[in-house]
Amino acid sequence: MLQSLRELPRTVWLLGLVSFFNDSTSELIYPLVPLYLASVLMAGPRTLGIIEGVVEAAASLLKLLSGVLADRRRSAKPWVVGGYALAAIARPLLAFATSWPMVLALRLADRVGKGLRSSPRDALLALTVSADRRGLAFGFHRSLDNAGAVVGPLLAAWLLAEKVPLPTIFLCASVSGVITVALALAVDEPARAPAVPGQPLRWSLHGLPRSFERYLAVLALFTLGNSSNMFLLLRARDLGLAEYQVPLLWALVSLTAALFSTPLSALSDRFGRTRLIVGGWGVYGVFYLLLGANSQTALLWPLFAIYGLFMAATEGAEKALVADLVGGDHLGTAYGWFNLTTGLMLLPASIVFGWLWQAISPLAAFGFSAACSLLAALLLATWAGQQASDGQ
Image (cartoon, rainbow, N blue to C red; front, side, top):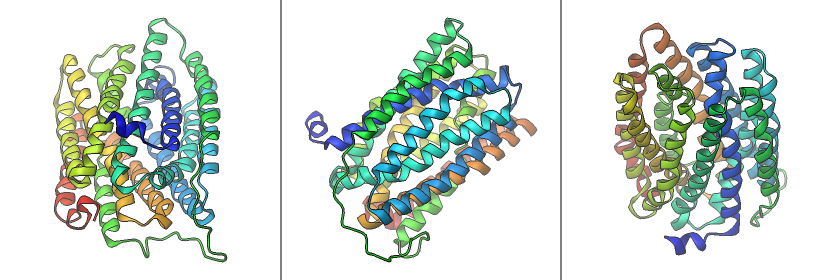
């Protein structure tokens, strides 16, 4: 494993480090947003659902646009650099938010940055390695991404324990944002065949493999039950977890994902992507059922560690499967549709989840998500998996 990691191209390593520092910034802020909304701006689960759903849905449209344009221009780096730069500017400005619409606007700017960079970056990763190392490359990238997501919450927990005001913590995010942009500028882009002059932009799924379309359909169902992770943190807080421990709990998720993303994703190179994804979605369903029914604070720690295993098993394999199913000339577009599907479905997912929580009960909301994930796992293992299995 170590030898295989050392043999990964420089671009994979640099993109991994970019994600490490970016997520150390993002995850410094991420677990604090629901606390800020609830304790400072007096907004509840329904408002949180609207904010997260709207910003992710809007950003997902840009993920398709940036992917299509990266394919058209045969260049991904400008989108990657620009996307990280926009997020680095927006996050510290949360320190000056005085209402939830301002939080919405700044979260939107942050997610727009993600929308600009995500699909071109994923295509860049896929183009840099051979097919038999895609799982390893995407898993390694997710490992470094999640390692950064450990540093951020730990720093947030320490700052909260030291009674540092939330606005001051938000301002601290500017430091690693500068490092992120500098590393992104150092990324080398592999040579690609020039674009055919006069070729129209390709926005639709027409011409992409039928197996990819089935995969997107099942992914949409899963994502309908995959609402914002902020609801998980809000659930932990409602169960009585101390505020300074909320970032620590999320750090546990990221640490578990960081430790297991590389080996689990590498397994998909040998045993097939769909098997790993189906297993991960099954774990997700069980986790949501248990979290919705749980009333014991002590059980939150093992439950959130299990959630980290779900992330480790699926994040890299899901993206590697896209490259397996779609040819290299259209990878940006394919990742655009992949990211559009997962982002756009987050709007109804978060709104429905917030409504079920507030109107009925937390168990109803978590049970709905579990049902979606388990049904999606069944469909991927049967209907969609007939063509997507092992990347064929």
